[in-house]
Image 1 (tube, rainbow, N blue to C red):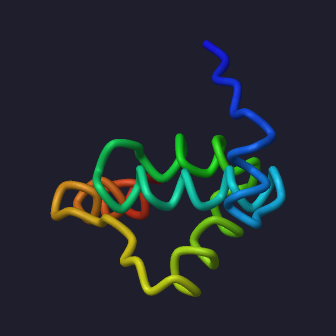
Image 2: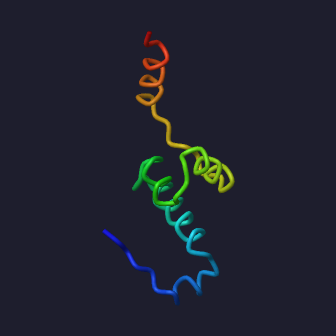
Length: 78
């Protein structure tokens, strides 16, 4: 699906198209509508860049107990 943002909205926001995408991705991620991977994709950034953007905007990374356990399991695999 493609969403078209009218140029007038971009002009009113005083953001570039890229900045608008990043702000939208941050908003949706912060409210748990998108995963880190999906939000990074929307922002057209790799996950590391997007995590830096989260930090710059004081938005915590969502990291659950299950995420921790999955990471621990991955680290312990031979």
